[in-house]
Image (cartoon, rainbow, N blue to C red):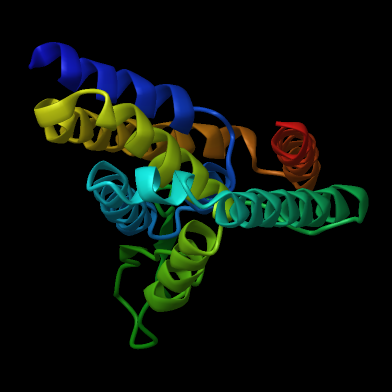
Length: 226
């Protein structure tokens, strides 16, 4: 039983660690301190549903429909290529994008009373960047996850196919895969917080977008020739 569990965990981690559209989106939102925990939970729930579908046998069924598999594969190529080209566009054109880190507010002296004899009182004025609403961020996360055909190739097809080899223990294998997803997204929320300190300038963002563009285009090319 433990063998099946750790096999699922290991397979999931090996697939999810690769720089995909979902990871890139979560990283970008995380370094901006924008609802990263809620988005990580959204990613985890989505992955759990897709993994469950694969373990339930959907992936094995689809393997007998080559035309559908090819449709999903080329859809993934187009999706990843488009995502990479958008990142390349952001990297090549000047941007005024930076991160405002949450830092302690400096004490500010309040004006003394006009009546005389008063003393200035030190007050803390918190200056924070305007936060964006949660709903659009979650909708974007759902779109990147559920409209990305590459996600189906990894979770539904590949995880589902491998889990079928474990027979009655395939649900233990699936549970291990879900735990692996939970571990990864938890690490992403922590890593994004530390990465924010190195992404405080537009130049740093352009370097990150250049890396994202290369990773997405290479992934699309690999999927096209697979």
